[in-house]
Amino acid sequence: MTGQGDFPEGEDLSVSLFREYLRLKTVHPDPDYAPPVSYFESFYSRTGLICRVVAIMTWEGTNPTLKSILLNSHTDVVPVYQEHWKYDAFSAFKDAEGNIYARGSQDMKCVTIQYIQAVRRLKAEGRKVMRTVHLMFVPDEEVGGHKGMETFVKHPEFQKLNIGFALDEGLANPGDAFTVFYGERNPWWITIHCPGSPGHGSRFVENTAAEKLRCVINSFLDFRQKEKHRLNTSECFTLGDVTTVNMTMVKGGVAYNVIPAEMDVSFDLRIPPTVNLQEFERQIKEWCKEAGEDVTYEFAQKHMNQNLTSTEENDPWWSAFSAACKAMNITLEKEIFPAATDSRFIRAVGIPAIGFSPMNRTPILLHDHNEYLNEHVFLKGISVFERLISALTSVPAFPDEA
Ligand SMILES: [Zn+2]
Image 1 (cartoon, rainbow, N blue to C red):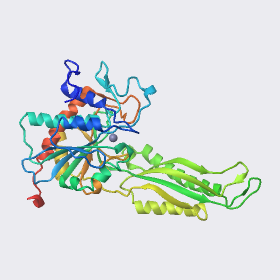
Image 2: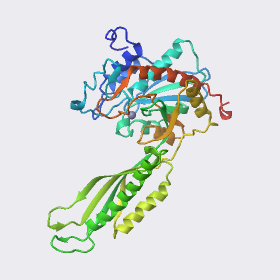
Image 3: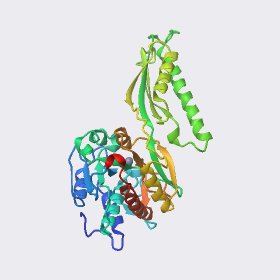
Image 4: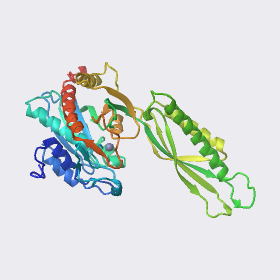
């Protein structure tokens, strides 16, 4: 283990490990993945260096031919605006209430150490698991996962892991309940090109780019208003249940007195997996047509992933997960993840995945200034994972596994 001897006296070892891990600067835009990998090497039996840096630790089950359980976490974190932080964002400062401040304390270095410590505790108790457990540590989630999980799920090393069910990141819940995520919205980044007749700025030129642009903007923002209203008027809707629309870029024009030949507008759309995506694209096409001649669109990103992980009581994985939570008196709130995580790549290759970061009574501070997690919430999460790992590795063999 690294940093031995620096641990504050009387502090729980798990908390010390967590704080130590938070100090490793895996921050974008230039994350250093070497320290976390050597950090994990100090714990585990097996490493793989694939794509950039994927590390895997394996706890072999008593029946290793059965499908395994994946405990996935990413090692990278987003940048900080240090001037807005109360403490150094990489110092893992712990205040008098036990709140640990650091970038990654919620997203998601907490979960990484919780997985490791939960497995260590189970092993220390002499427990055996029937299904194999893989702990996986992946890079680049915060920049889209393209060189991380997206590539790795197609790699033979990944397929060899024979994964049946996966856990990955979730979000904090400010209340007593814990949130679980069984699907995610699809990010669509779209640019609409509005060509028009150029001319002198002193005339009423027909068929201008700006008129078309206005039409396009109105269509998208009217729809935005409707979705916003839907979210705000019904209690049962969370952000994951509606489509968010944001106009993020506008381009065009060269001079005050020249009517431009083209104007472009870009939107960031996040669409729930329950929406008919083909139908939605037809709607966009219609908006473009209504805006005028030759209005076209192009995607910079277009996810079509409509996989939802079953949360039906008769699903063996979900029933093991939810029964373990019930036994701990944990209330679960099921949601669609509002943004994108690596779970989408896992679900896309047919593996059910639940997003779960056990942090209740905690404000949602991922990517925010002064991200923190209380040490007691962190420690409770280790016990939660102990129970979950026991439950998930005990899911009886399926007929096709025999
Ligand atoms: Zn994350």
